Structure formats: C-alpha cells, structure tokens
Image (cartoon, rainbow, N blue to C red; front, side, top):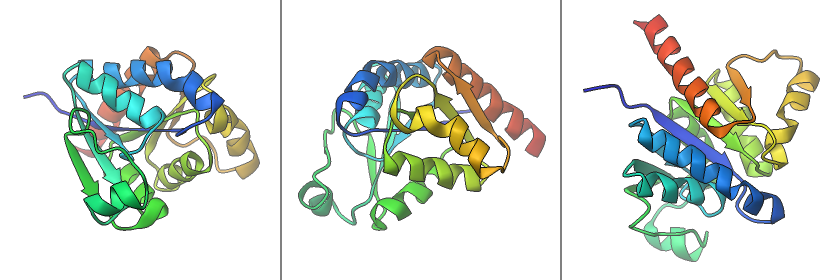
Length: 186
C-alpha cells in the first residue's frame, strides 16, 4: 500500500475574502483526495469545510480536529459543523482553538494555508516554529498573502515554507517535500 500523508488545510471561516477563497479550497481538497492522501482540518466552517467537502466528493478521507471537548460543545459552544457526510472523524481536542491548532498541525505531515485570519496565522506560526512543512497559496487573500512579509520581518529564514499561486501545483510541491523529508528520516 502506498504511503498516505495527512495534509492539513487551514484558512478563513467567513467574510468576503474567505468566500473568494472557497473555490481554491475545493481544488486543494480534491487534489489531496485524488492523490490518495488524508485531509486534516479544524472541523470548522469556511475554507477548511469547503476543502473537506471537495475531498469527500472526490472519495477522499478527512479528519477534523475540534477545539471542543465533546460533540455537544462542538455544536453548542463553538457552533461548528457536524456534517457526517463530510467528516469521517472528528477528534475533540478539548484544548480550545490554540491547543487544537498545535495538535492539528503536529498531527499532520504538512499544512496548507489558504486565505485566513488570526487563527490561520496561529496555525502557520505553530507549524513554522515546529519546523513543519507549510504550503502557502498566494493570491488567496488574508494571512496567506502576508506570509512572505511576516517571514522577512521575523528574520528566521524560510525553513520548509513553500509558495505557489496555483492550488494544484502547491499540493504537488507539498507532497514532494513530504516524500523528500520522509526519505531523509529513513
């Protein structure tokens, strides 16, 4: 059996920019599924939900990491989707958003950033600080379009950050980098 990688998609939940990024999220989700990998999200709405729906439509699998401690809290406190037609598994992290974000990116082989706001920035910095692979879909709006500038200001180098404006090419580059990193660890 071929290796299945877990690829996280992070992005904005609502607003004009996020809605403009939805078609890009669907392409990314579909490509991850078509290539036989598992999509990971924050079990939330917006960009991650659109990616998860597209992955399911392409017969892929996905895992959602909820900030909640239970299904009831997921629905009633965080007001997040529970769609069993979309999510194969929801893991209730019980760590709030910040703890969920770290657990989610550390449980993934790579993270792809599409659009986004402050939570997406938190997911990016968690992955970056842990020296994880991060793909940035430039031109998708929000935080994604600010990452180059943030890296310049931070003066910590690029590490394993990959940039592309094409969602298909970005997924291919991220998968290639995962394979490369795993081969080095053997």
